[in-house]
Length: 129
Image (cartoon, rainbow, N blue to C red; front, side):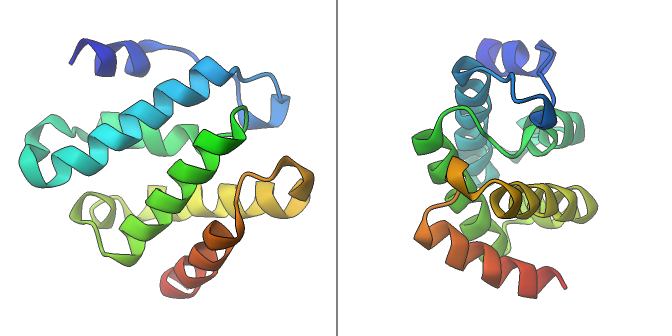
């Protein structure tokens, strides 16, 4: 849980500054994996602040394309699968999805979504409409 506390207490550059570091994005990626794992095994550790502020509020990941693509795809797949954690945070999920789609659309050269991710987010966009 020390890693979760570290990620949660860090201040991150907003996406629009373009100054976020790979370490920042990788920390959020690690947290994302904890969210997916603990959904089934120990959902009590997933507080609303942890989900909303430390994960959803940090999306999209823009500094490490490989990690960002993987996290964005997994996030979309979890929405499609109706992950209970994300279903409980519908407004924040919609906002995160909107930011990911907007960034991917406005800056396609950044490649924050691969082809599979683009297809998944098209499906997610329809589900959330």
